[in-house]
Image (cartoon, rainbow, N blue to C red; front, side):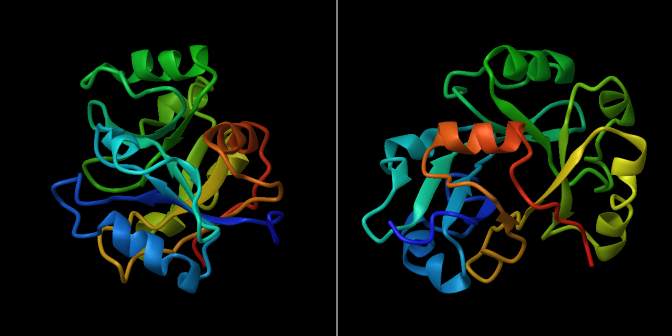
Length: 202
């Protein structure tokens, strides 16, 4: 495959498996590359059921489709990537993060400054969460801008996610990887090793 280095992914995309989303898998497959994306991560709410609908990995058209989920805890949401298809819903925050760590996966704090669903700073102070969304496509500019200085105070990496629920939103806030990403294992490895470019609100 050509151009597998420097791959551009939308890490935060919801399909109609999330009740709040209007975006179908067919729309994603047919339009993601035209939006400049090399890959898309399906992160529906509390489910990885998309694995039953699409073969994960490189598609025939060259798009990489990977499956994670947006997992809700008490007031805090995380994008989870790893072997979490059978993860029970509703676990306490620190239990989820411990499970992710033990499984060798990745947890990304989603929309960390969104009112009502903001990230508990103590999780960063304790080193329990190492990656956050530096820019979320559905946050206000003020919420995104508030995150820019966090790496000065905490050991966190910043990625971007469109939080797409519609076709117009798909690809609006991509994350650029500096290594090839063609599988879920590749994605987890690249995130854990910081092989991406920091994404912050302009």
